[in-house]
Every structure is written in structure tokens, then in C-alpha cells.
Length: 202
Length: 181
Image 1 (cartoon, rainbow over the protein chains, first blue to last red):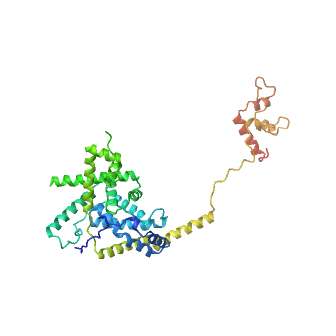
Image 2: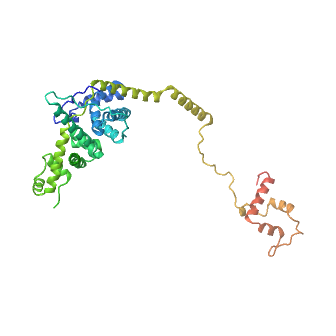
Image 3: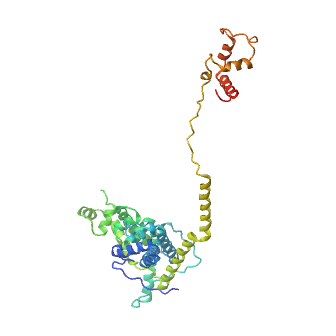
């Protein structure tokens, strides 16, 4: 088993900083370097975004192996498409769009054995039982998120966990802001219903 | 009663609803129920803030795998084993074009001699060089009974040729005269 470590806590509980917080100038320089054929530029972009892309993919499928494959696929697609990237949108928005498309097109492979990464390291201030219960609840929530309809899922993940604005989510998903808001509202209602129904079943 | 749209309900969830929406929510249990559900859903979603975080070693392996895949793609595109035959084929193609020339469709040249209609092919009777031939090839005047309405036999023979016959006759004459007609 791999050593686990807690994910950093973003300001509002999301997985990532806002796109607005990115160093867009750094991105632009690295994109230009990559377009000049300097592979190091792409390496820096990967280093900067690998966690965000992986987390997006993980939320989508709720397992490490598929998330790893999807994140690899997303970066590979980005590498292929980078020569044609004209900088009309922020690199991060463009990359998120590629990652969401990789998620939408990904077919989960059957795994011979479950090799899930463990939950975050337990907080020593909490008892083992509390941690276990907390871990189970988090498992259920992540599973419920991954079962949402595709567009609702993408909207909820980008908005709640990646803390993007409605406009950024709309740009990534190619939807209107109104549609993003409606999808998010449906997603939140469906998530709650799923969790309540499952608790009722158990 | 017209209920609030999802968009408006989301604004209410974010605390950005207008007075009209607020008044509606105060009266409408259905919309209030939907809003409460979404609020609970948001709390649940936000309570699951972390995902299992891979170790730093994982990220090294992630980049290494990605590098290998990218290098593999480059090799498959630029590998000499594939590139050389492609270049050779291109060279052969260029050479073939150079030798044979590019055959582009050319407009059909206008015939130097217009194909005359049968009735115009017959020369005037005064200096009709074909008449002698007709007479030589055809039956003797004794053998021909002038058709009704014909004063001379030769006149009637020619007049009674169909277009097809007169055309073939003209071709024969051309052949005999070496195409000078």
C-alpha cells in the first residue's frame, strides 16, 4: 500500500485553487516553450497541473487506477494538441476541457484486484472509530458523486471541488451559464437524494 | 403558481436571490423543499473535501510514464523504418510525375474540317467530280429506269439517296480522292 498523505485544504474545502489564482503568465511562457519544441515547457505544465487533473479524474470514477489512466490520457491529448493551442482561453481552462472530455470518453477497465489508495492519514486527535466513520461517509459521498449523470457530475466537481466560477465551468463544458447553474442545482439535489435513499436502504 | 427555475433556486442557494424569489420561497413549500434538498446536497458534497492523495513517488512515476508514452508516439511517427519507405515512395512518385508529365485533360481541338451534313456534302452539279464515279460504279443508264418525276437517271439516283447513304458516299469519295474533297 502506498503511503497516504492528507490533501491540502483549500480555502472553501475544494480540491484546487481557482483558475483565476493560476500563474497564467507562467503557463503562457511554458506553452510557448513547448510550441518551440522545448519539452521542458510541457514538463513544467504537467508538474503544475497533474494534481488538479488527477483529482478531477478521481472524482469522476472514484478509483485510483482509472483516474491515473484518465489523467495520463488527458495530458497525452494535451501534448498532441498543444501545437494548435492559440491561447484564446486560459491554458488551465483548455486543459480542464481536455480532461473532462477524457473522462467522458473513458471506459472503465475491469481490474483484477482492488488496489485502492488508502484514505488520508488519520488525524491523531480523533479516535479510530471516528476516523472510520468519517472515512465511510466520505466513501459514500464520493461514490454518490461518481454516479451522477455525466454533465451534472462534471459541473459539480468543477464548481464544488475545483472552485471554478460558473463562467469558467460553462467555458469548459461548452454550455451556457444558465445551464451550468441548472445542472449544479440538479446535481446537488440528486446527490442528497442518492445518499438519503442509500442510508434508508441500509 | 409559477415555481422558481433551477437557475433562480441556485441563486437562492448562493444567497443571491432577488426579493421576488425570496417572497415566492416564503410562500411555496415545493420550491423551499427543493432548495433545502440542494442545500443539504451541497453540505454533503463539501464535507467530502479530500480524496486519497497519492505519494510523491506516485507523481514521479506518473511523469515518467507520461514521458515514455510521449517518446513512444514520437518514435512511431519519426521512426526511420517507417519514414524511409515513405520518403522512397514519395521520391518515386515525384520521378514518375517528372517523366510522364502530369496528364491534365486538354480541351478537344475543334475539327479542322467540319462534319458536313449529307445534303451539303454534295458539290454543285456543274463540276461534280463524283458524278463520273457514280456513273462508273453505279448501274449503266440503260439499266436504270428513271423514277417518276425524274428527267435524268443520275439526278434521280442522287436525289433519292438518304442522308446516311449520301454521307457514306462522300466518305468513299474522300477515300478515293485522297481526302481532297
